[in-house]
Image (tube, rainbow, N blue to C red):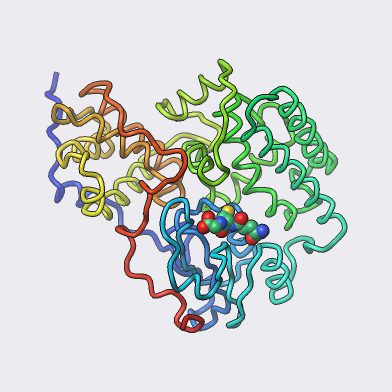
Length: 406
Ligand SMILES: N[C@@H](CCC(=O)N[C@@H](CS)C(=O)NCC(=O)O)C(=O)O
């Protein structure tokens, strides 16, 4: 039997990292700073200001729309208060600090529906306009479903009534999809109605599994078919998050999420937190070598900052986990390093850091490496805020919007 590998040196790991992908012309990515769609940078008329970690569903709605319509745009990011202080340039621009915002031809728009209306006026509608009666009716249905979701997810007690109410609204959403016959979308083609609903149903699927043991996709076949069709769309593949990120980013945004403590909820929570992650309903397929390479490249890019902000993370232990990731072979970390590795495992954020499958394979490598050292878990994730995710150390100095700032 060959001996277990020693952790590779940083230079050896660097040599295994892939070149950075083309985020300007390639598929949608949370790391893109601008998107071309075949146009030169001077042609950009739109600046999307969204939250840095891509946790805000209203930002994702506008992001999806721009990607689907192939409108060139620039991206600026701002903190949400639950994880970092609001940037001064942004509160000068938007005193409430609310996201998203869009600057279109130098004019500021806030409120995601008003933003979509302005974008529709400038670039045309996506399938069907936001103000058409069919889209408005679906929009009301999505808001009713949203309200029922919040009441069930965040409510203490009366779980059965809230569960039944959500289930009833989910059934209506499923019927709206099924009513389109063979097509998977809310109307006869992909449209604004789908874009508006996607960010919220993505969060419902993750959170209801984890906190209530309710599998929205398995329960409702037309909703499942809708998610399967979405999995084919690069706009969603690039902007979607994963179950782990959502179930821990939602509590501070919603003021807390309540588990009903059912055996199903406990089993899903264990699996989402501790793995195995393969086969979860937050991605189609399994991670392959290109996902491991993506994860490796992303950690290497930020490793100096990671080591600074995570004093519990041991340099050799991180190299051991990355060696496991890059070679597929177990690589023992130094004694006493398991908690630091698991702390990092719990703080991978999708899509901010990398795609769902890359995150899955990195979590698995960190977990398997930590397990060679022992059971120690990382510092628990906070519930009332996520200051552990303050983006400032990772950000190049942001100047904000030169043409709209003071
Ligand atoms: N009605 C608004 C809602 C936007 C909203 O609630 N944004 C939240 C994030 S999801 C926000 O910016 N909150 C301030 C903060 O968290 O800093 C819209 O449709 O744009």
